[in-house]
Length: 150
Image (cartoon, rainbow, N blue to C red; front, top):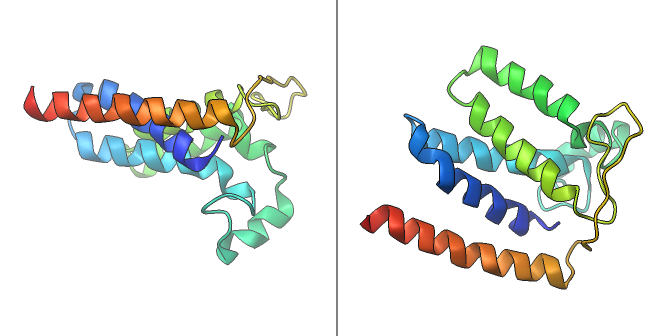
């Protein structure tokens, strides 16, 4: 999926459950950061294009370790110990990204290092990806209006 679709999905989940968290802005921000992180292992991703991530990409294969719940849990634990307020939002954003990628043709080795891979039917940047993005933007705007105006 494209970054914008991942972000739209992340925003949707953040809007749906932010009311249960004391610091809503930190929660939403961490969901968005968690949604972006898994694709830093690809030089084709929006943020992975930056030169700072190239050495990292040399050692890590796209949709390998970084695209797994193994890594999501480990990184979330680091957040938990060093910045407890942000870990749950980060984990939710990361998880939403991984689950969304399970619906793509390339799929994800969700429990890396196990070879078990979940694959779907969506083509990144395809018609369904575009349609999903548009639908989620509309839903997110409705949710934002509802939150603001009650």
